[in-house]
Image (cartoon, rainbow, N blue to C red; front, side, top):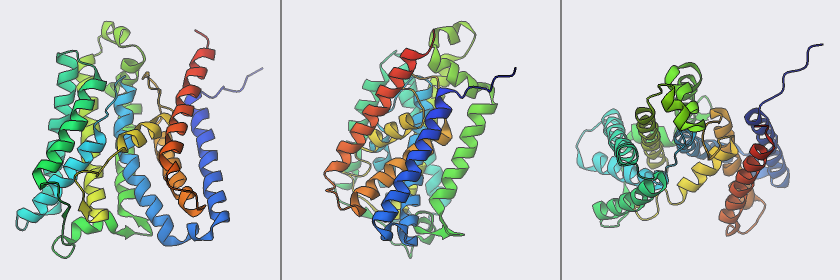
Length: 323
């Protein structure tokens, strides 16, 4: 007799999370019909796409057994740099701004990866320092003043953040493109599969000939590059960047979305689709707080409790798993 194939832990978690997302959307919409207005749904999708990009970058690092606490500050810093370029370099195109920010992301990711791998420093400490450094850079570059841009002078920048095509916000298409590339890389390439092996057991991966240090550096580069893309979209969406607060606490939301989506904080397992669903759950939760007329003071508390629940669940699943 052929036994049905048992679903793995990550798949089960993604399915449960999808059900929770559906319940949240329906319950919020039934409680307040304004949630289903097209303008509201477009805003939810746009914000989910930006958070989803951050969470995908964070997931790549977590898969390899690391963590990046600097993504919120890097997002704010990249947003500041992007808008300063738009305002001070006459005639600069969106593609030139994007290329400059991608280069910035590569440099930041390389710095993180090399410090962690060559000096054997803890990822937590390196990226915590970066969180402070890039927040300080953002404030110093601008004199702690809000930076904005003129949509008429830079219509392409405004369009990628605020525009839509076929009813979907442009950031959603960027997210889908990044999701497709990362999904293919992780599932169908040798380096991608090596990342899972690295996170599961770094020593075993090293003895098996896996280029551990190069892969770890690459994971931080990927994370920073995806983060600066999210920064460009957010700057275009809002139309301005506040140096002192832009991206604040985003690292916690990105980590929470990744863990909700099936990424173990110990590394070695995860699902890119699950990460996006996790980001959507967090974004819809924030809307639910508003549309159900609950004090917004509870938003961070709810996020923290959701992250704690995800971590506890992961620990219990690992404890029950046969060795």
